[in-house]
Image (cartoon, rainbow, N blue to C red; front, top):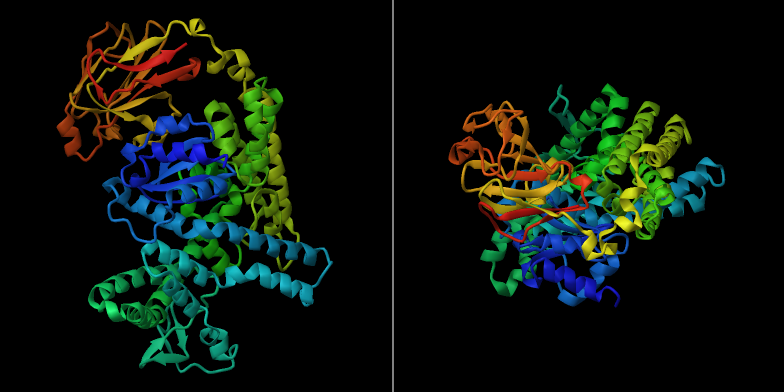
Length: 640
């Protein structure tokens, strides 16, 4: 019952129950599909006790809760009756229908429901690997076989489970999706069963002399069937279920209601299963093999560079949901190659985060920060770093960059050591068994994982204790909720330098601006192509392309106005500056003009960030509650 009020607040501030298409959850986040994200009160949610932050990524409105998100999700579904939508939503906004967002949303929707069980069964396989590598049991014992059955069943029959979740995503009847997945792993159609493990001669071969040469052992209505091993596969069943969604819907329309219940699945399965074995399965398997080969080639080109990039950027991938695009590739690599070198390089990240957060716990004098940091530290040690990311490291910036650096070093060491994962195992401390080679046991790759992770943890801790964290920023007397009204002095109201529609900064497409890494502020969708000085000061920056101008006001505030996204590529076209870098300007002076329609005609967005680049020097930068920015309207308030 303790989550009732939190859930009511969340539902009200995502636009109410009527604005929710569907909702699911992962390890730390509620993932909403909203009819209109503009109706959500993002700022209010971010300030709500029990909410760590809000992210808008991949067509999803993500409310980050923390480790107790399953309890919050349960309360939410009980209050609203809303769960994951089994139908494809046709009323998404155009923004959500771009290819990248659609891909991320599809992958996360299919894999999120299954990841926790996949990790749990992987931990059982990891335990089995530890017991075998230490000589406690051998791989012929009954103990080993039963534990292996418990741990490997889900991964071996992965197409069946993915058939269910993919069906939920694509709007197919879930049990039809399971049948499609089950057909792919039907024992009599496994290549070894048909060929007698190589003792039965094929009828003939197809694609002879090419990379796709295949032996044919059976035909379907005279058409050769290329049999492949679909156990643990990912791509074939997802494509098959998507194809089934295109078959099932017309059947729903044309088959009479009186026989629809059994004839729709009858014809769907009758059509899709043969097409899957004849066409979808082989092509998808070849795609998977090529994907595995490309991933391996990229890794082999420079394991060290791969470790730096994946390790150093993994936290950023998680922030924006980009890691969902890598998970199917890693699972595909395990299926095709027997190991993965992709996700493993990011596994130092939660430990680097834990080291940084431990440093904050040691140094901070703020009891509230310590109370938040301790559970976040424990969570990071077990592989869940979002509470640390959004609650501790990211708001303090330097600690966030310390995490990225320590993670990159950990990834570098693991890359140089050739660390691989051989199972989808647990997270954090529970992931170590996944690095044990099932053939050779504990090898250099395993030691590389231990050394890389330990180095990332220690480096994150040392950086925080030395240069990455100043506890004064969190001291009790500097906290806003402890300040008396009369001590908040010299607040500065910033007028809008541009007329137009005010947008939340996090809603724009450029992630550097949207995440606040360059400073706090807002974005404006201009209705008039003029930039006006909002106070006396100096032009400290004027880009040669004239698309962005920076001012340092006499009161010390540093303001950046960046007209449009990627408009630097226009090389000054449609822009006309009225001042030069170094000029002294007066309040109300015209600084820059630009042609809105001209910029839009070139295909560029005109959403314009207006940010305080030195906002870390102030207690806060608060957005005005206004939808329109006009001359002399207060846009931002800088709180000293």
